[in-house]
Image (cartoon, rainbow, N blue to C red; front, side, top):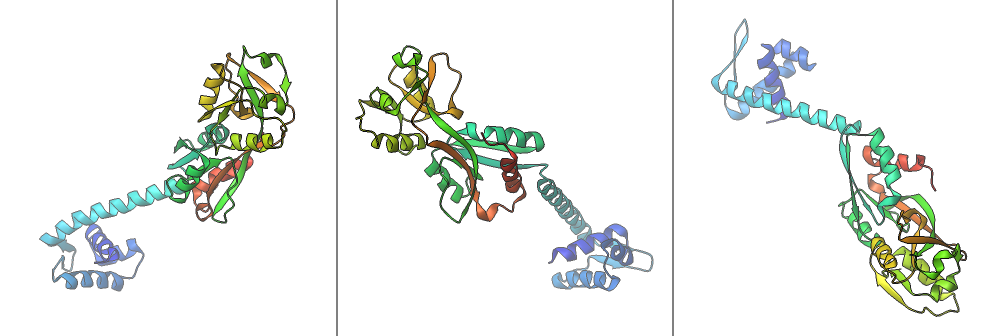
Length: 289
């Protein structure tokens, strides 16, 4: 049974005749007759009783009409759903971010323009987020490095320099800036290996003639702030990640010039989807810091 046959049967039953059904469906009357004939012959059943005045339903025809009505209602609901999603009046996007702060300004504008689209933000490191992106578990990844793959499309979200943070009781808190050598000679609170902050620091410290005095390694930016506030050492964060914390003092690093970049990445094969392209367009329209 083809859906077109069922749809034609429903039209004949609803509008009381073959000519009326042909007009409503915008097809020829012979085409209507063929659909009904094939449907009845395929199952060896009579669905309609034809007479000179009108078409009547048999018992099995009445039962089929009820089912056909439900299927056509489902078809209309499906079309409405797809139309609303196509017009961005509903939908769902999941963004995985190594630091959500970089994508929040874009999401705020997106929510204002498309209030009915649901947004979900998850966290993770760059490696795990790219893997989730490939498995279609998330729609976008916000990561610190631009993945070198033709499978992805990426756009720069932000560029920020690194600064040092220390507790207000630390001797360096009164200084407006420090050098990299001064940091290396101080107790440090460092991010875990693999984080972009740690990669930048390791690269810079290898060029220095000074040896690292000592450090404690913690996982995550929040852990860095708490360890620094507890007096365990001096930490490093990007300017975008600086929070208003009365326990901490922000200090410039005057000879560390490499910046922290954040990229938004998605699969190239999905950029033609309305929701995806809408968010990417908003990224391009948003002024970069």
